[in-house]
Amino acid sequence: PAANDAAAAPPQAPERFEDMSYWKQAQVGYQELVNAIIRPPRADYDDAHLGPKQFYFGKEKFQRTDFELRNERGMRFVCSHWEPMNRRAAELPCVIYMHGNSSARVEAVPQLSLCLGRPCHTPAPRRASPCRRR
Image (cartoon, rainbow, N blue to C red; front, side):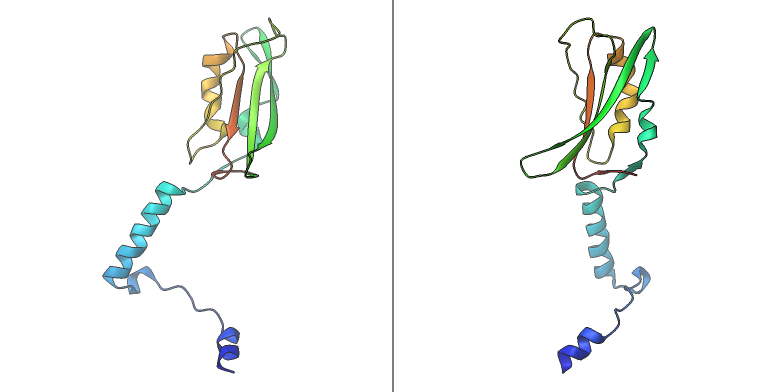
C-alpha cells in the first residue's frame, strides 16, 4: 500500500537554486559546466541556412546535395555535399569539413569560398548528436 501511495503522489517541483545549500549549488553548477563541455546544447537551424540547392560562384554553377550516413553503431550523420555542376574531370579532390561538437553544417558555408574557387568538392557531415535540423 505504501508503494502505491508513493506512485500516486504528484511529482514535486524542482528545488529552486536559491533554496539549495552551498554544497548542492556547487554540485549543480559543476554538473552544468560538465554538460556544457561534454554535451553542449544542439545547434538549431533550418536547411535554408545552408543556402540554395543550386547557385553560382563566380561564373561556375554549383549544387548542394543533402544526404544521410549511418555508422556501425547506427548513429545518423546528416551531410551536405557541394560540388560543381559541370565537372572539369571525372574525379576531383574532396575536402571534408567536420564541425565541432556544438556546431552544425552551416558552419561550413562561410568556408565554401575557399574551396569552390578551386577544383574540388566539399561535403560537410553533421555529427550524430550535437545538431538538430528543424
